[in-house]
Length: 86
Image 1 (cartoon, rainbow, N blue to C red):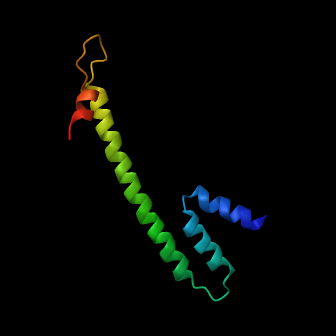
Image 2: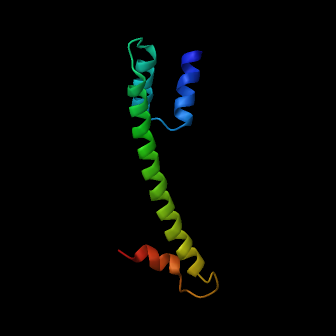
Image 3: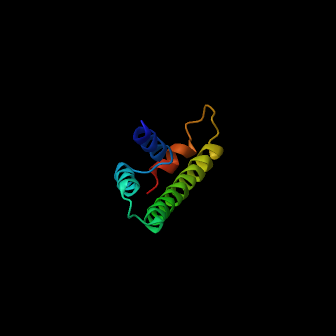
């Protein structure tokens, strides 16, 4: 049960299955060093930071298209125009 809870918590904070397996390996290793765990976590934080930046850029783009769209009876649509751009 403790192991399942550990896995659940790791998934809740977004560790991949491979990272979770590595964390389980480290947890079971009495000779582990905390720097190994910290390095794995630092890598995960960097990945999350990159994903957040990507999502923020996506949100800003979509919000701009949405705000520029008249949402009326006109066929002109900034959202479709934005999606057509390369």
